[in-house]
Amino acid sequence: MNVIEQGQKIADDLFDTPAFKLARSRDPSTSHDAADALDVSKMERVVLAAITSFGSNGCISDDVLRILPAYRYSTITARYKQLKEKGLVFVDTRKRKGESGRQQLIMWSKEFYEEIDDA
Image (tube, rainbow, N blue to C red; front, side, top):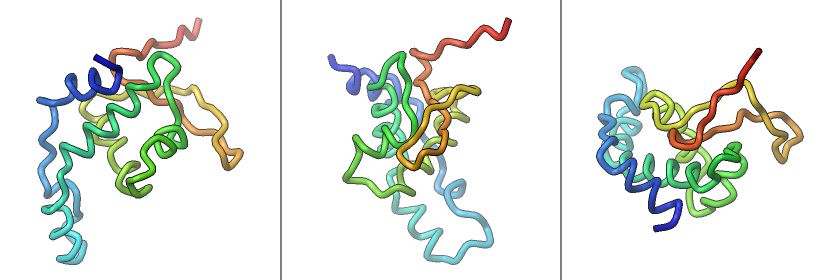
């Protein structure tokens, strides 16, 4: 089983973000319709599998976007917060330089995250 398949297996039963969390109450009805139509659990699994595939090195958003070219930027990046809230993806203060030259936080899937020792 490859790393992406492992990430998908780990995530399979953990995803059930309700559609109401994907659109704010003040958003237009089209946003609510889109949230209802989106298969969030699938997208969360796809993004988690991508992050997991980087193993203990972790990844930045640019890395995830590069290996998921079939998906839009906003579709991918919206999943980061949900995955962090579910305790499946971790970030800390470590960063790497992205393609823009700006620093981006490094993300790890749960099984590869190791806390840094600030001592």
